[in-house]
Figure 1 (cartoon, one colour):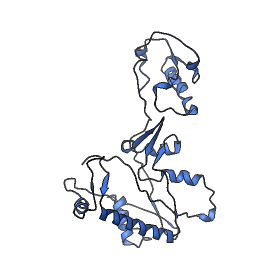
Figure 2: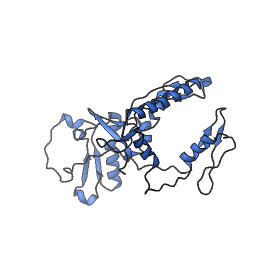
Figure 3: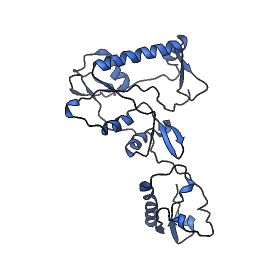
Figure 4: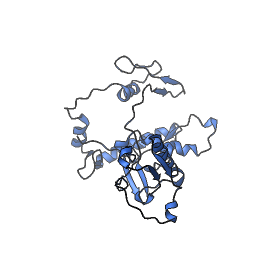
Length: 270
């Protein structure tokens, strides 16, 4: 994006220096100091003699020179994020209440095979729904849309983005009843309740690695000079939370529950 072909520059030497005031989202100095050397090295590899300046020294001197047309071509370089990742050869396992790991297998049609360790038919149906191959007739409106409107539970809202709903009284009551039922069962099961923020910074490399898998579905919030991502249904901050806790071996398996009141994921129209 920012490094052009050699013929475009029409110069023998290039000086790479940080002109940070053009950016709204500045990185920390440790990360920023790596940028100029990498660009200079890339230019050297292309046969262009290049040097880079120490970070920030342009503030301590004044220089006047003729501007080059390439230098005037403003670019807003965003966080480099790959398209949604499809993990190959992934392994999905189920852990039973006794602590046994059950590895799931699929047939030639990518349908899940029933493990002998799973006796609960409802749970097996859930696994098929989540992991099995599903054929959807795009010409037919899903049945739940008609139900949620007829019973006045929840509906689309024309004043917001696709995928965001407005809930009516009966829908709110049903949702809260389900929430209370699940929480009571999980507390009896020995789970601990936690709650994490709805937005987080991508300056944390561990979070950025997960975020990079779903760039097109992200909502961003700008706060001052910082940029935050509104979380989608995920446990991004959960791992960071427990990495800062003192956990003893006999705590495991650790049962954790978080009710995410709000999750954000951009959806397509239709």
